[in-house]
Image 1 (tube, rainbow, N blue to C red):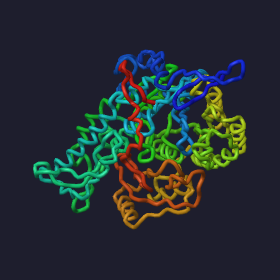
Image 2: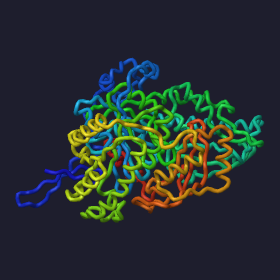
Image 3: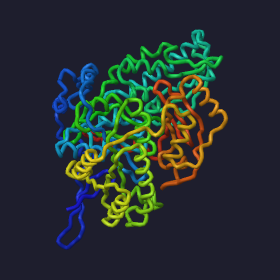
Image 4: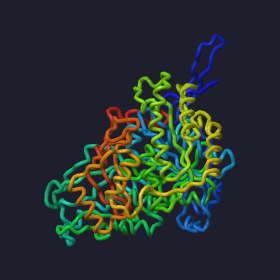
Length: 581
């Protein structure tokens, strides 16, 4: 008996004595999650030696871990840190989160005390194109429905803090504008955790003068807010307030920067975030511990879960498995150049997820032809895989490739991929976690442990703090994207120079661009070279501690697709959620 994976459903494939193929529906992702044999969250905490009095329970199956208890673990040694990333994403999907969960379960299965660290899903993508983000099949984090919806309310708190600051800025101006803020140069935008393109640019304070002063503004999705980035990089509540206070919100008429602390917003914002800042503990289908906390976008921000969750996990486990959003050119680069730099993390290995279907698309195959065997397209798509492997090695990290297998993948295609990886000196291990859970990832888990024990990581960021901001942008463009040039107008160059003069030149850069290509053109798949990285604008995230470099047509407030996932999400007659995946 084999197992097929079709549109989020697990389907058993059987044959009659005559040889005729028959199919029988088993369960969808949400049905599998709903049938999970979950343990009380206190039992999951016991596996990490977290006492009951260090938990704030949210029902029976999720809890926050006390910040005061976390602070007492600082003298414990760190476990090994494994980053899960992927090749360039395609419409065919890569299954990075699912692979991470499968790997974490697999490591626990072979006797390695392991914690997984994930980002919290945003409501925007859940109701938009992506659907849920808690894994799939038999490699899921539960309670799946609650994680994908309101969870513990963290994102609502972050949105409230963001919008409190916006309200206090406008209120300051209304009551006399003592700071002499130039209303044309207010950079702070309101936030909403939903895809809504109509809010990208808005005009506020319409109506009578009692409503305030008319000005143009806009909304970002909550996960693109600098508050989210600050939340995910802060060390503790004191550091959180300091970072919030240092966020730049506007300029005065004389050109001076106005900070959130000048508006006196840092204190009340911290109050709104104090409960949310404690990491959330949940479990996999196999009752292994997972921290899900924070969730900045990967093509707009740095795309990693909170530093406090990752650092806490490292004190409690032998191995910690975490992820970075989208492909390695975005997520992994930002994890290594921003999160690790800011949080003082030293990763030990990288697991690079690839699928035959995604390689075919990067090799030029059309989406509707991916079920046809095409070894040539796989080999062509391996150029994309090779680029990511080369890039990871530039950071001094050992790497293993995880092949997330689908039912249409043929043995010849898998052999071609594994042979290609052999020529690069990299193991490529087939993973069948979707169908088999940890039983399908034990080989991957064992190979990852062997890799860490055999090959010493020699991690170093791609560029130094001392390089100029333009040099940092050019380094990423040429070394990671293989661009032939970087173009930016005089206004952008002047702005970067001004920030360097103001003392921000040491900050890392966070390049915001399409996730679908090494270039800024989403249709240019594979491993393009010689293209131009056109910088559209730059933004100072002084609180988070990086410069955002916006390239191409990246939006900080996404829109819904023509047929959003929301159209299929509903309650059934029994009051249960349907359509969430």
